[in-house]
Image (cartoon, rainbow, N blue to C red):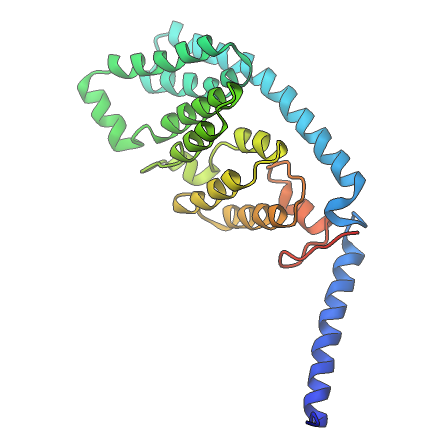
Length: 245
């Protein structure tokens, strides 16, 4: 069958546009080999080392924040919030028994609230953010003890929140998925990212999810940070298609 001249011209234009788009992506890509570029891998490894050092500093600073709140007998919600934030870092570095004792302490603080205060807490945020941090801490503990499937289950359970203004605006914890993705586990990371659609909304959230899921699909190293949307462009990724060399 002979293709009409007009149709052939249209097809040629389409192919030329696609070719120009690909050339444009490669021209503006900072990494010639895309996700397989050694310079990109070095960048991510340096960022992961930075996050590890930062988290160790936050282990100390968040512990001080909690102790100050408790000593000053501040608002009970602030005391619980400070301790739950500290848990994220405690679970990464401190002994297992120490972390478990701090998890128990959070619930003790909760039980010490008056009934009226507990009701107010449920109305305000349902303690969703604090529950999320406890869940992430338990995931870290399971992972450190070799129970990887249990850790992944706890990771996904931690994100089953009903209402959290904080997480809705700023997103969930990424310290744990940063670690397990680096260790080669992609399935629980994808499930976790997809599940954030239930509460983490907006252009920033959508952009990060799209960048992360596309990079995972292409086997890219990821730092799980807001800079990933910039790196996504620098890698020359177009609609999830980046073959590299």
